[in-house]
Each structure stands twice: as C-alpha cells, then as structure tokens.
Amino acid sequence: MPRPMEEEIVAETARLAIRWWRKEDAEALFRIFGDPAVHRYSGAVPYANVDQARAWLEREVELAPARGFGLGTPG
Image 1: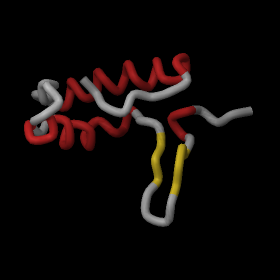
Image 2: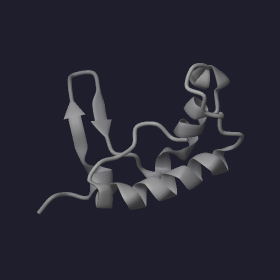
Image 3: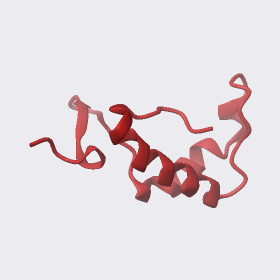
Image 4: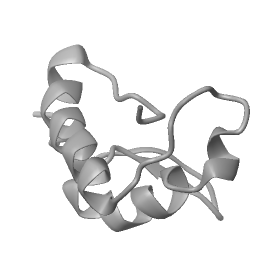
C-alpha cells in the first residue's frame, strides 16, 4: 500500500530531498512566496501574510492526492 503523499519522498540525492507539501510548511512557504523578488517575472502577487500560505497549503494537501500530483508553486 502506498504511503500518504505528504510523507513520501519523491526524489532524493545526497544533498536534496524533494517531497510533497505539508501543512507544517506554512512559515517556510511564506518566507519564499511572500518575497516580491520571487515573483518578479511570474506575475503572481506575493503573499501578504502567513495565513495566505496556510490557506494554500490546506487546499494543496487535500487536493494533491486526488489529482495524483502536487503543484510546485502557490498562487
């Protein structure tokens, strides 16, 4: 039986592990996607607060298993 997506390591090297988003990632997600420089060329609006990151993660953690894939960028 497959492990839950939020616990599964998708790819791993000696220096990097790629895994599914977790609800606990909200602070880190906000530090990245709240930075206007990250969105300079994407056209997305930076998150104004950590609650926006939490809301995106809540949706993503619920929807990814049904889709069979996770979205890499919030927004």
